[in-house]
Image (tube, rainbow, N blue to C red; front, side, top):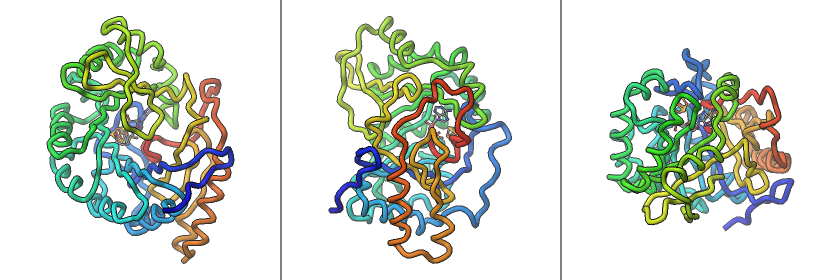
Length: 329
Ligand code: SAM
Ligand code: SF4
């Protein structure tokens, strides 16, 4: 097994998030403009074999856990094949996926068979009208069917991602926390991040994780630490006695930069060492020009060496140009 590579700040980078498409079947208000994002174009999109090759090079540098994201990963043709290709890479220990869940009834069984370990499903409300408003086109019943399919085929622990927005869905925080008790859900409450064109809305609708936690504790009593498997920045808690868990993802109010172990690969072959910096390392062009693995590995190493130590997004009035749907959260 390869030795993990340290970044320029001495952090071990073992977690790769791969955005496999910038397209999506929804248009969530916090993520995309109503008209969607400009199409990358077929040629600019990495082929499945190219993604697998880059993941293999990353595995040689210490990547152990891969999360497939998007856009919506389940609209990418050949997604099941891609999971199987990544599963075949030595040193990759776990493969997870972040999805809106709409197409999981169709794909959950095949994905599990190909080696996907678990899913995070984005669900911001349990009210059908609100779901339609937030996603601008989705049906709540489809997302709930996706959650059931994930459980049915063992893509567990299923985690529910809820972006908390003031005046939009923050009144549902307590009932989502209730599902961790009644249904054993693992809910991750995410602070609205001011990325791309959604930055203005984010500043108007921002609710800090501290406020979210206070609301939950007022209703459910003091939370206790929970030790839930995961590779990301969530601190996890639980209502005492519940089977589920509560994660609080506070990219803005409480940095997790010093322990950040991740790097991102976009659908057009760019390595992005930090979501909150414009630093980007192109792999697409050299790869299409015929670069060998060693040259691509050198670009990986450069990206790792320059991963920023931290961000100060909470102080910034404007933010990076990364669009969430392109980079995958
Ligand atoms: N389409 C998939 C989905 O929705 O789960 C995967 C891609 S989506 C960009 C990944 C995650 O980013 C989702 O959980 C979504 O809720 C979250 N997200 C998108 N925009 C965000 C924002 N501005 N702030 C915080 N989280 C955001
Ligand atoms: Fe699509 Fe996911 Fe973005 Fe919603 S959050 S628009 S489902 S990529």
